[in-house]
Length: 412
Ligand SMILES: NC(=O)c1ccc[n+]([C@@H]2O[C@H](COP(=O)([O-])OP(=O)(O)OC[C@H]3O[C@@H](n4cnc5c(N)ncnc54)[C@H](OP(=O)(O)O)[C@@H]3O)[C@@H](O)[C@H]2O)c1
Image (cartoon, rainbow, N blue to C red):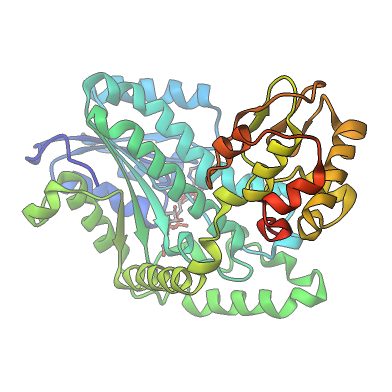
């Protein structure tokens, strides 16, 4: 949640929208102009958008996969044209379907180049201007696919999941500068995004590995059934986003606390809610497993400076369940053995194998084995006790003094 930099809607803003040749991007242009703002409409092919040009609409060729240098140059041109830039809408995107095993790195690269890296690049181009004036809004087009991944839809989902994380971080980096970043989590809207005749539908892998045929066919069928029948009207979605950016038609208490994520569509609300509920259920049923005391289980830092008092070290080690993993690996389940055997084996181990070495994650010892543990940070009084108990060199005493092996905890 963030505080918006300005509570009152401003009369006129300059927007830049990517991917205006069709769908939501195209719908943005008239919606922005209708509320008195100006827009730099961009598309990969200028011919696709030229008819949109007017006093308030500047059309520009822009492919989000172009290099940072090229995008920076275009942005500079745009800013000088209308004299400002207030809102960037990272809308350009497409769906690349297919199963993980069959998708080559070229597909992965192309999907991310447009849906993620392109949006990141253009945001990078625009941020210096926004930082300079301490205001601006960057909108990203997320998706329910960024909350729920389905078979053969993983690549597109991965790109939208990636955006979720990137935008969340971006927002926390820039909100203190008066700049807003939001990801719109869209449900299904009637655009050509699922057009099966589009070269980007990429079901060509349908002939691939037989084991995946059914999965791919199911997604292709689902796309064909959905295409053109999505309930959501893209013009209304865009109107909602424009209102949101301009902070118009929003309840005042929502204007005060604008979240990073905004669901657009009741299906988006349903998907996000289900994901949250499922996650809460998971946390309930796996809490015990997850709450295992990893802090205690991890080897603490035991620094044995000069001269190891072997018994002291062992006493502490047994009490806090830490004995060098290399030692355990070498002599077997030592913690279950009688204490004197542990001491004997450990002594031998130190003498023969690892003296002077750093072993496990934490035990560090030197050549000299006659003084005390310097630092013993884990609990159970190990540190003080380890230092306090003088070792007379008799391993049998150790057994009786410490009640034997029950102090030793199994290490697995
Ligand atoms: N419609 C939905 O149900 C829905 C749901 C969730 C999220 N979204 C997101 O909404 C955004 C818009 O999608 P849409 O539904 O409007 O689909 P669309 O009608 O297919 O429009 C996608 C636009 O992105 C453009 N584009 C693709 N690659 C580009 C590139 N490298 N550089 C510049 N522009 C590029 C396309 O241009 P070309 O004509 O040149 O290919 C097209 O103008 C996408 O990010 C999509 O992931 C849509």
